Image (tube, rainbow, N blue to C red):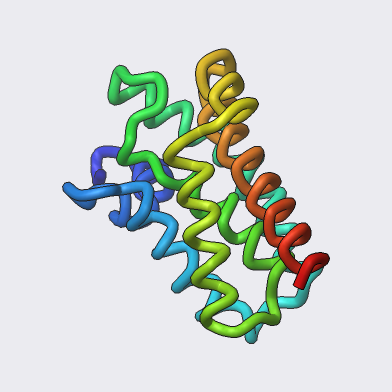
Length: 152
């Protein structure tokens, strides 16, 4: 992690180094950091952070993946962090239970990768591919939450 400063970001400040479920641990880091920073950031600042985080993540996640010699290494969790920040930005304010359900639904889409997420995961390579499939998982998470809210 410390061989290059960009690895620190790609690996979610170490959360991706978890030996068990690094993507889940990275998403938990995203949740905790969102809760910590949310009182201090406006919606516009969050949006800017997410956009910059996505664009920069395409570069440094691709860099780390190349150094590791793997297309989409599981310790690279910046993609989960940015995507889950996006989910939380759209669902907040909600209760802890609402955030927990957002976490569960996002992890489902990120782990199972149902179509079309699986298509993007398999066909888009490099840093953009690493970042994009999680963005699609965030979209489907938000779609499920929106549909659930419409029926509730």
